[in-house]
Image 1 (tube, rainbow, N blue to C red):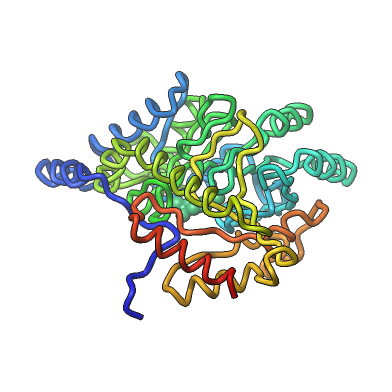
Image 2 (spheres, rainbow, N blue to C red):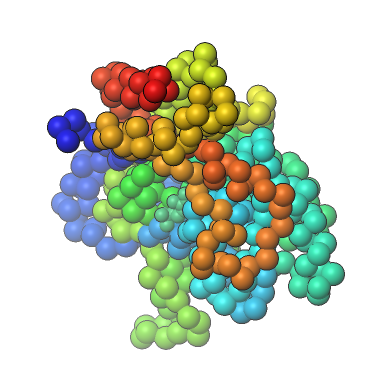
Length: 381
Ligand SMILES: *Cc1c(COP(=O)(O)O)cnc(C)c1O
């Protein structure tokens, strides 16, 4: 293939990252502590503009979820509720603790956890004497979940919420930034996310002691003693000062990255405006503001002249353009086939007909032309 690959989402450096890394080298701050770690944490706090927010930067979003579950008091044989349509990293940490995931369907407006099914599930688990210990809700592809409705159910049953904001840095709900709506929130800086540290994540909480506890657990749970003494099991989950340097550079351009992703989304809205059978997935109303980390379309092959989601994906692949079906719901995954599921089939339907299109902030006009031509040629067939 002679054309360069167009990726779904690839890293996009701002320019200043290397300066932060060079400073770390110059001062030999190579360990998982140092000025970039503290600086990155305060940059995130400032960006989310939430006064009492405490930020702990970690080695991954998955590590942040694991620690959030520990801090929520989840232990062996507990049950934890999790949105079914999500990346496996949302659910895997539940099993690290020997706890059991209970999966919930999406609602059609945002594709995120359905508040009605959530309440049905909680009532049913309580009737089985298994009150869930936590609720993991995800802002999928940058689209905020129905925060008020989910929080109302959680409050009614007094269950803590863990907000998986891995894909939603820069998104807002009713004018407030995602990452600030729950007892614990997590971010990811993996290579494909809206900004990256090549690998990394963060745990966010309004409770200073919880942050301190998270950092303690993330640095091998060392008691306060001159020798190495441990009263608890610890982890090696802190972010390095080098990675945090990349993060500081990336925070300087985050607003530009959100703008560029939203422009990609607008490009697709315009492209499909007069195309039958393809719907671009948009915010349901002005309460929701998505960073559009990935643009999602829904293909109705009865109205495209017989072109299915998979046909379109294969056409794009033939032009060396990456696209991907939506996350395969967790209740359909072999590894979770024994986990209970509450729902009506919305996630399954979107898994069948949904496609994520190239959405990177670094795509050029030429890339957009290639994407447009590949799609229009495919639909002509
Ligand atoms: C990327 C992602 C994670 C995990 O983050 P890592 O930093 O890759 O461990 C968790 N949840 C969702 C929804 C994600 O997209």
